[in-house]
Amino acid sequence: MNKNLLLTIAISARPFVVAATQAGYVVTAIDAFADKQTVELAETSIVVNYDKFGFNADELLRVIGQLNTSQYLGFVYGSGFESQPELLQEIANIIPLIGNSAAIVQAVKTASIFFPTLDFLEISYPKIFNKLPVDFSVSYLKKFAGGCGGAHIKIVNDDSDVLSNNYYFQEQVDGRSISLLFVANSRYIEPIGFNEQWLSPCTTAPFRYGGAVSNIALSSAVQQQVIYAAEALTREFGLLGLNSLDVIVRNDSAYILEINPRLSATFDLYSANLYQSVDDNIINMHLRASLEADKFPLNSVEKPIQENMQSTAHAVVYALESIVIGDLFEWPSWVVDIPYCAEHHDEKTIYAGEPICSVFAHAEDAATAKSLVQTRVELIKNLIGIC
Image (cartoon, rainbow, N blue to C red; front, side, top):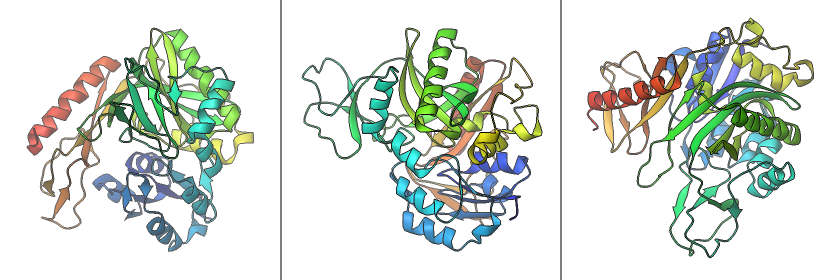
């Protein structure tokens, strides 16, 4: 087996490909976009169609079936499987999963399992309902437990809405939207960092993911609540590798929203070489915690090189309407997820609602990094001409 080969799959695989190549792996990437950096870094880059429920299962299995999977260390995955864990299991029958098993993903992403588990562990979360209460003075949301990226969340305007499988109503709690990125070995966790997230709403997706910033300031009380929840849920579900926990913070109280039991968007906010040891490179931590959980106690992980690390922010720039991007467009250095044109002078069409690119910013604190990245979003919109 060639230990230098990894198969990386996500709706947007670029950050995982970057980290894996920095760690010395040769990568085959499969995703929905195949941006310029992914194509340039990956040994092979393959595009597979997707919709609101994730990857096209038949197409993805056909692509994987054409690969010599015996060459690969395993399958590193991000978003695109929450709503169809059975697809993840079919892939696991072909190549080892690096991360949580399909059964764990299914359990965490099933509302009738996840929220009763929070109750059992006495962990707070915004109230959920199978049927809307009579009192409509409170705002309610309709959510799909297998969704990702916020596009599945809708505001409920009256009590005529009904639920289908794995959907639920939830009381809307105003507060600060944060997440904890952590690595787990089924018993313990190592926090990577706390992040703040924000939205990029549109008419059809009012809770669409907009961006995030790392290394935010939080009270010790909130940190302790979130870390306790991550540890308790890790033990209860047997979480492995990198995961993220989404939380709403209000009045110094943390309310758990969901676990993303796979590599998440906030992975992108942390250097692959965040830790001192080469073996503790963030992608290697994911591999070791997934494949060698019993031999990776986490308490041996060396602490970050800097006690006061910079904050990194990223934000997604979406197309307001369909636009065409040519390969001669000059992108600033702080832009990633750039559309890839296969031929010189070629053009790529980005359809309304789809991401055009992502922008980054670094600063000494989270507030400055967030402000700078939001300024850069407007700058790139002006450059592209989509304001």
